[in-house]
Length: 92
Image 1 (cartoon, helix red, strand yellow):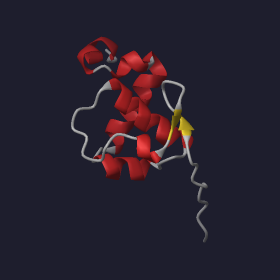
Image 2: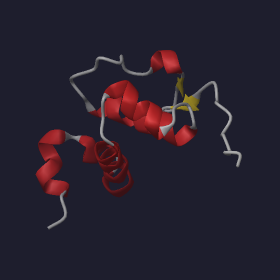
Image 3: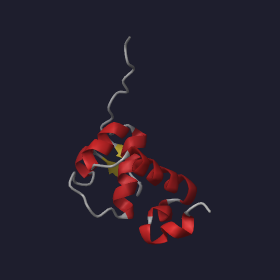
Image 4: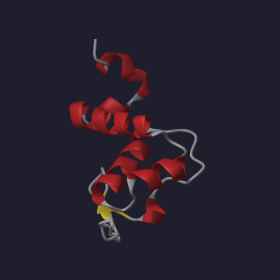
């Protein structure tokens, strides 16, 4: 059985509207996840620059953590990624 592999893209449009390449992504050893960095990783996965598995491995994230970032962006925009506002956006 053959697996369908998506072709790797050279760049995607980042959260600020500028081109985002692998070189522009946050460093692998990132410990402080600010809104911009989270949004860049989500944009990279959505655009095909990284697979979900690559992103989780590269940044030592769980799939659930990444998916929560993605869901926060979908529901509340970039402000949903603000950790200090997390309680405000959580489901009751």
